[in-house]
Length: 442
Ligand code: SF4
Ligand code: SF4
Image (cartoon, rainbow, N blue to C red; front, side, top):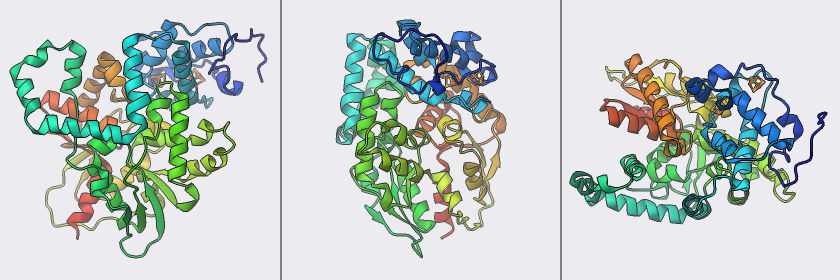
């Protein structure tokens, strides 16, 4: 209930449309401040969760217009949700953040022809149909494999590109030779008795860059008594859109997911990407105003499971010990949206500890953002790089030769960091280590 005397906003406002109990929940205690990477870097109140929430509330109350400064602040926030874990009042920063970015976009405060074109191409076109993304992936793969990339890099011609384009080219991920549909059958039978029937979401960028992780996920599920349904043509989950202020596109993609994977037909709907999982578990909120989808969305939210969460929940079958003498030292970096968004912290460690042929060593600040944060490393490269260097420093301090993490963005960020520093560090999804352990013991 709003007890304040507030002028009604004159325009349609995403933040004003939020349940006011969410908007007014912050009690300004400041306990979240030490956990916020942007506040830690600048020590400025406006770069803190408390400062940002105050701005959001001022807009919801109609005291402030969404200016460029407001929009810039919302995009300086990583959306890492560390503040949610720290908050004793249970402030739903995730919901505030998504509505604040939608507010920023609706206001047009950041609008420019170049930015609008990039957003129209990526969010409204490329990621709305994964056939388009796969076509782009195949072209990139060609560029990387016929030697053109190496030639251009060696020739020095790339130095003529603007700095940002040069930086982007340098971190373009390697595209897999085969995508998920080439590696995983539409139906993977359970090994032994079938106990569960699950759907596997293969993702968008994940499908291009880490289709091998999707294959490993299907194998691990089958090994643990699951029949795995993996349609060859899938859709983006919409987290990219929701986190970048495109609420309606995110709703469209959520409806497509619900049509493709009716939740009543599965025991679980599995994702192996921490960032996607955090979004996928909130379709009910996203579609709350849509009577033809909201009930199914509520059931969907209950059925979506992160792979670590699911295999521990059903009683993970531990891999058998092998005769290998060398047990690599492995450390675990927590994806923000897995630990802060989904509160999944113990399960990945349990999974890793179940593998006899490795030793797990704790990573200092394991839940501090690595700077990937969706596309944050592309739009805020300086801050993202500071966070990456901090993360790599901690990884090196453990002496580990392997770092495991459960989100494609974190994997890419750490791979790029390790390459830049010339580190001998394997960066891998925990499920791949488990799949390898199963293979080694058969
Ligand atoms: S989401 Fe992360 S960066 Fe944003 S306010 Fe919260 S802790 Fe800070
Ligand atoms: S968000 Fe939570 S922890 Fe941060 S100031 Fe508000 S009530 Fe305190």
